[in-house]
Length: 274
Image (cartoon, rainbow, N blue to C red):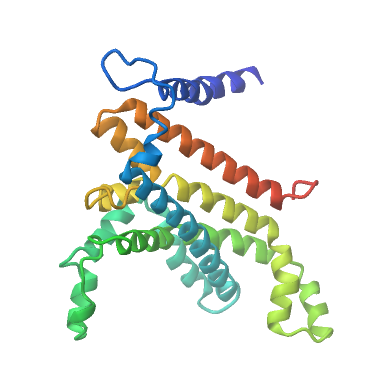
């Protein structure tokens, strides 16, 4: 295991330790030790406060939407004449990069974009607006764009789970008089628990570290209204040239990701690790 341990230490643990160390220093040329001054920015900087709000919105949206939509689409396309074509249409966006997805949605959401043109063509001019210009609407539409891409992998995983359910259990439920909803709730959902853990865990981590879609669509703007912690980390480090503040944001984001993942998995996994 020595080569693997060496690689993990070199490319993961060592940069993290250095980031923690750097977060306790100021951003002046001499970089004196500043204790927790960089961390105090979370209480004093309005942009970072908004960044935390946006991050929480992203976590809720990127966990709930792919889970619900992925499960619903998987159930509807598990069997049927056009199920393969429908699954392909849903899964295809997942093959695109976040930047490519952002370019597609930028074409749709700009002031003179496809969405406003369609609304104008339908006589719904009052609904046309600058979708990326006002908060929190701009954050919401970006979460929807992310869900459009992320739902594909959820569909794949749920389909694998559905196809692994023994049909005898559903037949037994039907013979006992269980309705379709009762079979889904008491037979299908419990057997999808391992897959659900994976889907929610992946969505949770991806929501917390979302960057490319936000950066291409708005670069965290207008102003800094749509920044998440990941975007704020980049902005503080490379644009504002405040590496100490950027390191502090990176440490806080890492702690949040690890804590959220650990708490969720600790609650969901049983002693067998299922």
